[in-house]
Image (tube, rainbow, N blue to C red; front, side, top):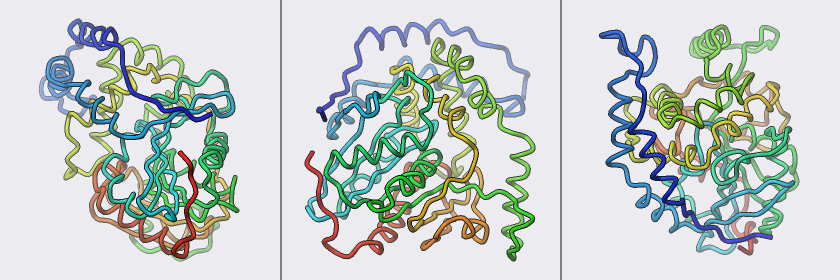
Length: 369
C-alpha cells in the first residue's frame, strides 16, 4: 500500500536540539591551525550558533511539504519517496537516488527542469531520513535496487531510467542489472575507476593523473569511510548523541567535496544535517558502507557518465568502457560531488540529453500515484 506522507517533526525534538546545541562542550584548537587538523573551530561554532538561533526548520519543513511525499513498505522496510508527475502523461519516468551524506534534498533544484520531460520518483535510501532506520542486516546496494524495482512496479512504470551519484550511482547500475527489461539506461555522476595494469588500453596524460589521484586515495583511506565501513554502530553513538558531532561529520564532507565556486548556503546544508539528526539515522545510514561489497556490479543497460572536475575522483573513460556499455560521456569544469545541488542546470540538461535519446517520443507513461 502506498500512503501520502507529511513531514511534521514534534516540537519537543526541535526544543531538544536547541538545548543540546546550547550545552555543547567544545574542544580547544591550536592557534592558526586552519584545516591542518580537521574542521576549523571558528567556522563550526558559527554554523552551530546559526543552527540554534537563526535557522528555521519549520520554514524548510513547509517548503518541503509542498512536494508530494509518500511512503510504502517494501521487503519489510519503510520507504519514503517524492513522486512528481510531468504534465506530459506519456513522459518517461526517472528514479533519482542520492548517496551519503546526502538525501532526497539533493534533487530539489532539478525537479522543476526535469519534470518538464519526465515523471520523477525520488526515494530515500532505506536507513536514511524518513526511510530509516533499517532493522536488519543485508541492506546493500543490490537489495536497495530490488526495492526500487518493486517501487516502480507499484507505481505502474513499465519502462524507466535510473540516475544517481555516490551510492546512488551504484544503486542505479544495480537496478539496471535487477530489471534490465525495464530500465532504459543508467545515468551516473560518480564512477570510480581503479588502476588496472592488465587492461591493455591506451591512457592519456589526463587519465594517468586521474589514476594517480585514485592511488593516493586507496593508499590513505579517508577516516570517515574506514569508520563507517568497519564500525558504523560505534560512530553512530557519537553522531546520534551530539548535534555538533553530526553537523561537523556532514559539513566537512560538503566543504571538501564541492567545487569552491559552488554556493550551497548554510540553510541548505543545515536542512540536510537536520534531516539526519531529527530522524536519528546516523548509524543506519553509515551501515550502507559496511553492507555494500567493494566490487564492480555488472550492468547490461546503456550507461551515461557525467564527470565533474571537483568530485572526489574523476572517471577514466577507457577503463570504464571495459566494464559498462557507455553511450554518453560528459566532462564539466564546474561542479563537485553534489552535482544536483552545485550545478543543477548542467546536470538536468545532461540527464535530459541522455534519456531523451534512449526512448522514442511517447514511449513512457504509466504511474498511478
